[in-house]
Length: 156
Picture 1 (cartoon, rainbow, N blue to C red):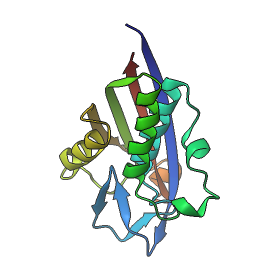
Picture 2 (picture 1 turned 90 degrees about the vertical axis):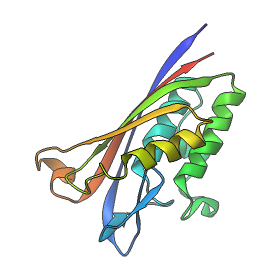
Picture 3 (picture 1 turned 60 degrees about the horizontal axis):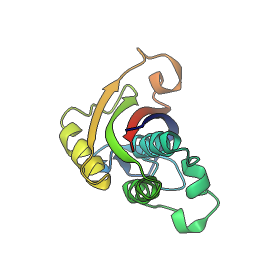
Picture 4 (picture 1 turned 90 degrees about the horizontal axis):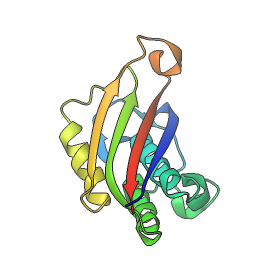
């Protein structure tokens, strides 16, 4: 049996008039994440972690931001498609751990739903979602945007 680990990182600015989607869940929040797709930093970081572990490039190589087909796209559907490529390359998810970085919103009430939505896109693979703050330091601390980090372990 062979194992591979991948790391993914993503960040987007918060913007007025845009829905906030995190981990595939739409949250009631006054600002959302600006991005070519729905801006879901958790799904984007997880996608990059999976692609990196499988040696298949990154999210931008599969879903370029200058391609209008992906404008406003559901990032969990992009994650599902990327995982199809990972599986086609002979890899299966063992587990993934995702961390949202930002002062707000608080995600505790949505965590289980986020885990379930991301897991479903990954054929039932184990996904953990958690959050941290930066104690008001940096762009996430000032409330200018959100970031996410993800680690994925694959096996062949």
